Picture 1 (cartoon, rainbow, N blue to C red):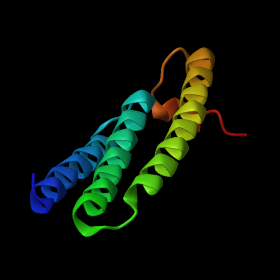
Picture 2 (tube, rainbow, N blue to C red):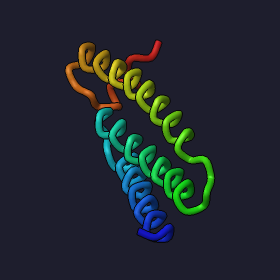
Picture 3 (tube, rainbow, N blue to C red):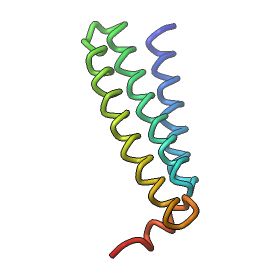
Picture 4 (tube, rainbow, N blue to C red):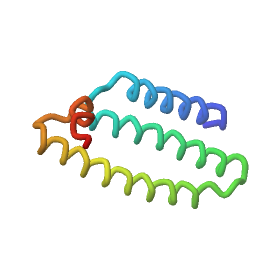
Length: 98
């Protein structure tokens, strides 16, 4: 694959993640959309490391570690929302304020 093809795939992944963030109301679907966007960014890092000579691999490992921590905290919040309201709709999370 060429650099151009990899960047097009990363752009498509990122656009899919943005679409998921805008259209979904379930908390788990939003977390998955954020994951798709993070993977698109990782693909860009690896593509530039492969074709541009930039040190992208350490950045990808660091980004993956941050993403794993984000998912752990996000899923804990989703479980708390489900235990409290019986559903994972984000409208229910706004009722939990205060």
